[in-house]
Amino acid sequence: MTKCGLVAVLGAPNAGKSTLVNALVGQKVAITSPKAQTTRTRLMGIAIHDDVQILLLDTPGIFSPGRRLDRAMVKAAWEGAEDADRVLVMIDAAAGLSKKAQMLLDGVANRPEPKILVLNKTDIANKRELLVLAQTLSDRLDPEAVFFISATTGEGVDDLKQHLASVMPEGPWHFPEDQLSDATDRMIAAEMTREQLYNQLHQELPYASAVVTEKWEERPDGSTAIHQQIRIARDSQKGIVLGKGGSKLKSIGEAARKEIAEHLGRKVHLFLHVKVDPKWDEDREIYEEVGLDWSA
Image 1 (cartoon, rainbow, N blue to C red):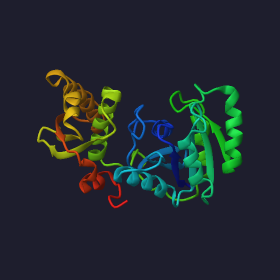
Image 2: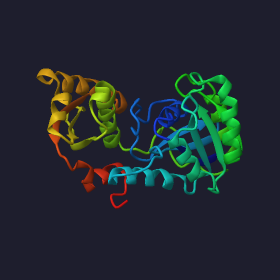
Image 3: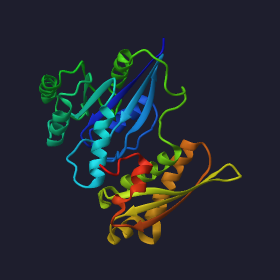
Image 4: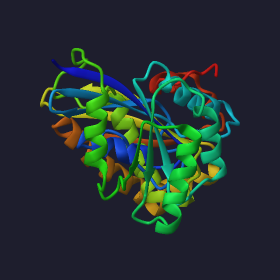
């Protein structure tokens, strides 16, 4: 008898949710960055353990929302927990009980779904404080299990995966064996470019940027031509993205093109251009493309 179940991965921004989902799946399906709030939408990673298919819902971080985009992201996170077979509550053990972690706990403590507590980044956390933190959180959440892991190094991830597999309900698999995510190629390509923006520009580029796919063309020679628009909020940011003589944009494009080509398994021609749009985060089309609720 096969088993299949849904696990909602909840946590504060930068808790390491996407890194964990990638580790459980065994391949990269979600973009990662040291920048908080990298994940903007609910993306499903599909992990397999023996005869069990584990559907991992990587959600945006829980935080105090301000603008429309923030509200849409937080709404997507909480909705992700609905109807989940398990809620995986992820805490950055190195950061401890931060204000954002407290906000997560307030929201999840009284939810009816069975909870699994995961303390991440234990490789860099204070070992003395770790057990005290785990006990405090356990008293608050009453989880069915507690795991100490490092999503980056892989420590403890296999044990967590085995536990998830053991508690999934019996039922048919929802996806083919070779499918790793529910995201479309178009979405993944845009996310890969956005990841390069964050990783290459670090703190120079504010959180307020987006990547929109304008054109996707399958060419007769078997290659794919992708035209993407990088939207930023201010004129002053354009020079940062372009770099001297366009060097930074070229570097971002080359790195993104390689990742996209590897994902698609074919040659890719990637064309990037930058557009200043102070109200890009009010564009309904952007929300629809990544599956967020514009009316949140």
